[in-house]
Length: 463
Image 1 (cartoon, rainbow, N blue to C red):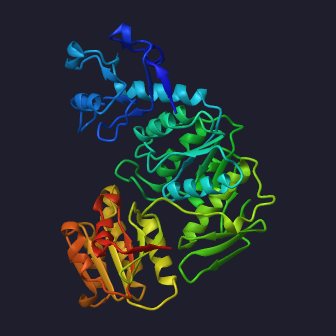
Image 2: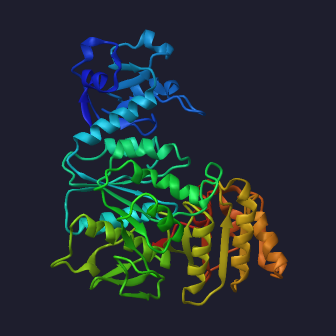
Image 3: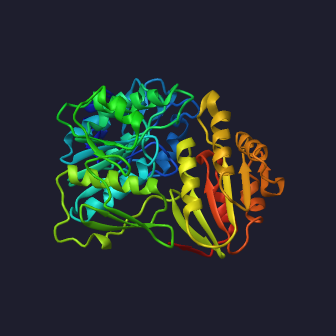
C-alpha cells in the first residue's frame, strides 16, 4: 500500500505543500470518497461532472484523513488549519501521476485484464489459480477498473506482492492509453470483445481497437493473451501483434479444455492440461473465463506440480453467475452487467441447466448501447422466444423491445409481464415467484435487479 510523507507527495505530483511544518507527516492509503475513507488515508478531492469532492473535505478531516490533495482553485485553502494539504492544478491528473509512479516502485509483475465480458470473473479465477502456488498475490478489488478506480487499486497494491492482477475497463478509446500508462502491464489478457459502450464506440471492431490500445502501448516482449473463439478480436489483434497466446473452447488454441462435464448444480468439471478443476459457475462462457485465467497462470511461468487442483476454491465476485437459493427459489444471478452477447449466452446457459421447476426469466435494460439499443434488445427477445419458459418478467424502457419481440413471436401474453421501471425494492416482482422456481436474473448494473433477490427473503444458501 502506498505510504508517503507529504513533502514526497508534493514532489511526486508537482504540487505545493501549503503548510511546510507538516512535511514529515505520513499518510497510508488513498481515498476519493469521504464516506468510506479510513483513518490515516490521503483524501483526494476530485472535481467531477456531477460531484465535487472539495465539498466533502470537512467530512474527510472529521473521518480521520491524514491529509488532503486538493486543487489550487479551492476556496478552502485560505483556512486549512493544521491538516497537511498539497495543492495541484488538477487533482484527478495528480492522482493518475501518483498512481503511475507508485506502480513503478512495486516489485510485482502486473497482469492487465480487459475485454467486453468476463473481466472480473477472469481476474478472480486467475487470483485463485495463482494463489494455489504463490502466497504474495494481489488483485484489484471489486470493480475498480476505470480512470478513478484503477489508481485506487494500484495504491492498495502491497509492496510485498509478487503478482498484481488489475482489471481495466473503458468507455472511450482515449481512456485505455491512460490506463496502460499507469498499469504498464507485464502480461496482457483480453477476454473478448462485443457490443458494449456503443454510445461512445461505433462498432464491435471499434471496441476491439480500443481494447488493443493496451497492446499498442506495451513493449513487444509483453505477452498478449486473447480468446481464440472471438473472430473479431483475433482479426484485430493480428493487425497489432503477430505473436500472441490463445485460449478457447471451439477453435484451435494454446489452451483448450480436454473435457467439460456439467454438474447437477449448474457448474462444471473442467480438465485442462491433465488438471481437473471444479468450476461453481454455470455456462460455457464461464469455462472460457477459466481458460483465460489458466492461460495467465501458465504465461507467468507457474505450474501445478504436486497440487490437487480439484481442491482449489474457485469463485468470482458477487452477482456474476452465482447460483443462490432463497426460500426454495433457485436464482442464477448475473445482474452486475449486461450486453447483448452476455445476455444471449446467459439465456442459453440457463435453459441448458438440468432440473425441474418453473423456468422464470427476469431481464432488465442493457445500457450504454447508443442508438442500436432497441435493435439489440429485439435480438435478445428473439433468443428468448426460441426457448421454452414459464414466465418472462421484463423491466425497463428498453426491455419493452424484448416484450414486443416475444409477443410478435407468438409467445402468449400470459407468459410476459412488463414493468417500465423496477418496482420499489423489487417486492412486486419477488411476489411473482414461488418455491421450486429456477430464475435467471440479468440486466445492466444500473437497473438494480439484485433487489429482487434481496426481496425474496434473508434465508440464503449459496452454492
